[in-house]
Length: 101
Image (cartoon, rainbow, N blue to C red; front, side):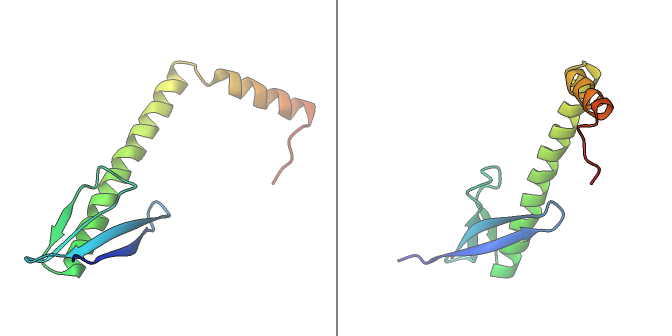
């Protein structure tokens, strides 16, 4: 019977916590993060090495996602897709409907 252990992985750069599932294999350790399918099965000779690999792969995936989000926002701004939001905010400011935090 294979014992699978759940391990919380915190990524302070993106301020998120993910659950990785790791297991001991005949040649070392294997694991994955089901909530992030791009972080497919990873392997390490030790549990510590596996967790480092999982964290590194997780960061890379989150970075790619973040960069894609930033690019999409920039494209939407340039295309004028967010202009209506800007106008609504300016109207709210002029009408005194916004509270300074």
